[in-house]
Image (cartoon, rainbow, N blue to C red; front, side, top):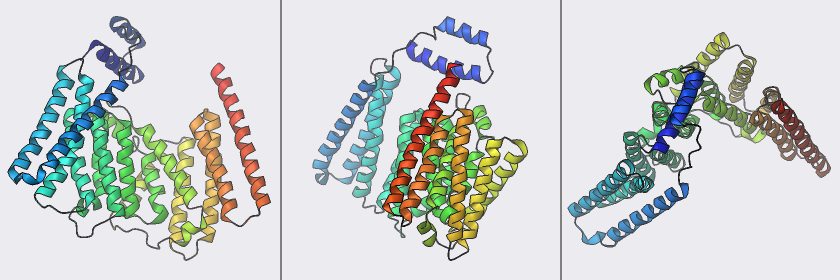
Length: 431
């Protein structure tokens, strides 16, 4: 590891130690002085990394194309040997340049990314050679597992992100083009449980982006298992309690001392998920075409209800802050409205209640953003309120004059609220 990379990594870790109280301010200053952590280190050559990765991809495609041109003239054993040799060469060369050279580290990383892409082509060609059939998303599942093994063994974030993105794409393919006769469906149907088992890998890679992809995979699988609006508030409640109710951050820090906390990411996704649910089910058509079944999976629905109940009780008994109580109360009300609406043929009154909840929720987000001077929270509430007003005007047959007045008022309100909030934020920062 070069001196610049060592100082950069040490600065990141020492900053975490100081924030967690493991070292004092004096110790932090001694580390800064001794290792010159206050010196500005040059940014890594991103352009070079992109250039190397692109070149590696083109070379990999050239090799695959060359092999494909003579593919029909080769026997099965020769094909298999060539494919295995291609994988071994790209992985070995990439790992050597990454770990054992200083000037060609970026080139080695680019070759490793190429090896991850080559793996998908190798799997497809092996399946073609040995006449293995199946849906195309099965290829993505196998490809993602292979890339994840590579990423886990190297503990390298880009390969880990590639693996989970491939897994997410494969699961989306399963949802959109499901083949009922495929054995791969067993893996896809168990995704609500497998996605939870993937969470420790986010700590292993120390990547919030990977945690987001894993959470999206879990949300999609839960959405398939549950019916209608229940797939939104229940996961939102569980995500809100992540890191506190489950003590997952504390356990992960014991296993992976260098891993960061994921609770802020989980809570941000929880807020967005509940906002999305309230907005979607504020429309009348969302309830008209709603299925009357509560759950399509007899295990996932009750399990999520139990977990959400645990989070609510734990948070209310141990965390009595107003923001937590307000969010959980809104999520519980939305859950109750969803359960009540599923049992009726007409959800008009429930649509009215959801619109009221959305109005209160938007105003609450704006108030939290103003009180705590959090720009993102304030603008989320402001955008939700504006979208609610505008969408109701276009959903129901209002005249063009009223639509013009409503749009104009929303625009003026956005500008006025934004100017006032930014002035208040600037005044607080100047003090």
